[in-house]
Image (tube, rainbow, N blue to C red; front, side, top):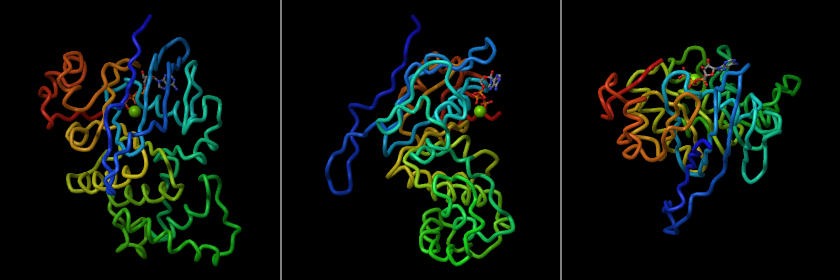
Amino acid sequence: MPARHQVTLDTATAVRPDGMNETPRVVLSARGLRRDFAGFVAVKDVDLDIHHGKIHALIGPNGAGKTTIFNLLTKFLQPTSGTIELLGTDITRTPPAKVARMGLVRSFQISAIFPHLSVLDNVRVALQRPGGLGYQFWRPVSALDQLTPRARELLAIVGLDDAAHRLAGDLSYGRKRVLEIATTLALDPKVLLLDEPMAGMGHEDVGTISGIIRSLAKDRAVLMVEHNLTVVADLCDWITVMQRGQVLAAGDYATVSKDERVRVAYMGTEHGGTEHGGTEHG
Ligand SMILES: Nc1ncnc2c1ncn2[C@@H]1O[C@H](COP(=O)(O)OP(=O)(O)OP(=O)(O)O)[C@@H](O)[C@H]1O
Ligand SMILES: [Mg+2]
């Protein structure tokens, strides 16, 4: 029987600002997740637990199955076998739109920003589609006005308030990605899935996005695919390392970076050992 790799943080506790301890609760979990493509097994025997208030990284070489897992969790792909539970509800057979309405939101679902609209209007448009379902262009423009305070709040959260009246298309690449995150937040996700949120970004933008992700994770769960191991080491509470569709190792960065199998499979000699500076792009 193949080994299952269960990820738990049962012993860890988060200290709340009010001084009370809170055991991180599992908000999204998968058991025995498997997906075949015409005889090719892309994902196999994957168990995952994603915790409220934590940032969880999914890492591994190209083709390891990371994006396929995202597609399975968000129901864009149906698992060949296995189960998925979101906030205590079995969503294994739930359609993707409903899963999004339940609070599991993937960044790219809203990733298309409207370049000819202002930054503020991009967020207001996102706010007027609960669950991200369809555009309601028939609504009177005045209905958008009611959404301005919340849109302003979301822009403040991601640090784009100063750019509210600029055209979205005029923003830098990094700030466009930040705007995408703001439009994703319009759905009020309980679990946020980010597939390579730092891809193509310069050093400064990476720092900005890291800060945003850290603040978002305070009251939701974040699962992110990230190739930049410096970012993973700095930002992520828990790391699941994938290889050839299976979980190779799981733990905090110190633990997985010491794991001999991980060193060989992923962080090995090619990328300069297990130092935090090692990055892998592809
Ligand atoms: N729709 C599909 N049909 C057939 N094979 C697929 C399909 N989607 C993914 N695969 C295969 O499944 C494997 C896992 O792919 P996946 O995209 O999940 O990897 P990944 O870890 O996200 O890689 P990367 O780091 O390059 O983004 C790959 O071998 C890929 O070719
Ligand atoms: Mg991928």
